[in-house]
Image (cartoon, rainbow, N blue to C red):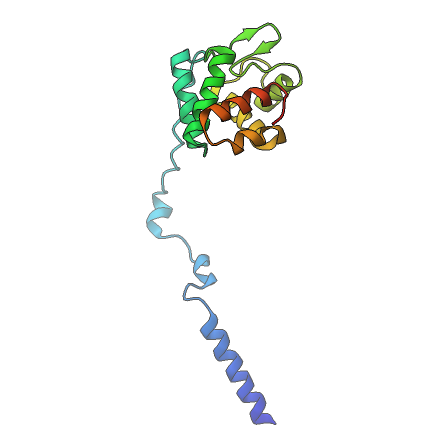
Length: 170
């Protein structure tokens, strides 16, 4: 019986040694190299900051940005085109358009305007990227836009947007 215990202990010990990584946790306990103790490494550089626009983009710049934003966020070409067409109809690509109770790029109003401003964390005209992100959130999370996602061309996608943003349905 004693021989069995010794063999079992040896097998367990060998298994433990073979299953350990070549990089031991003990390596992390070593002090840093002397050269870094004398001359510490420089702090990591700050991420580059992009200049903030001083005002809303021009309609031409907004049109290009709408297309670029939706294409880089997984939309199909005809869906991005339909969204551009919708922005043209709603605001003429003016990111801070204000038409009575309707505001900004996609002419939000009422509860949807309040939700946009809460989303932006700002009561004024949100930056265009914020407006596009909010539109994306609405499109992806509201069942009334299922027709938009089921569309196969720009015309049907645009019709679905007009119905959906107008509180209609498929």
